[in-house]
Amino acid sequence: MYRSYFTSIKLSAIIKISRRDRVEELEIEFKNLIEYAVYDRLRSTYFKEAEVITQTNFYIDTKNNAIQSHRIALRIRDTGDSLMMTLKVPQTVGTMEYHGTINPALLDEEVIDPAEIPDNIRQQLEERRIPVDSLYIVGALSTERREISYKGGLLVLDASRYLDAEDYELEYEVSDYDHGLEIFESFLNQQGITSRKPLNKIQRFYARHAMLTSKSL
Image (cartoon, rainbow, N blue to C red):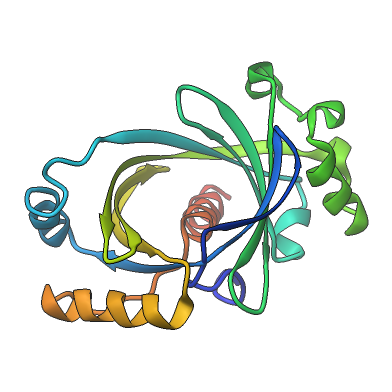
């Protein structure tokens, strides 16, 4: 169900800024799931001096999964300093992301107030006839992130926890798809890391959520 959308390939490049607090960007990055032993080794070598960034994603949908049925995703990211709502829309290459800052009080509501949804995101939802008055927070995923510059791109090491699950992931964000892919695959080979193209975090969260929900029925 979840494997058919959101490829493991994305690119980071802002292509349009409609307002100071509303941004649209095309993102391309390469991802690979790793075992804890590999994560621990990279953390103590390449990422030894990297700052630890903690962020929590709150995933949003309707009770009948209208967001997922359109093969898109909606989240709120809390970095501790700010709250950003993001709508992810897959493209032929990469994913278009629509961003907007939100009121922190939104996380306290059982149902998302449509008036609090950034205009650029609400427009995209309404174009797909998704009921913006039926959105709610399904659950959360927290990530401990480390980032370093690597050969013209950004190499990222993540440890994520969600719904009693934990996994580890290596990402590489670039500005050129072909060159970035070559560098990332070379790094995996150099480190003896098995290529494991993952479901992205959103997909892994919803897959876990679906499994737990089915068990409770």
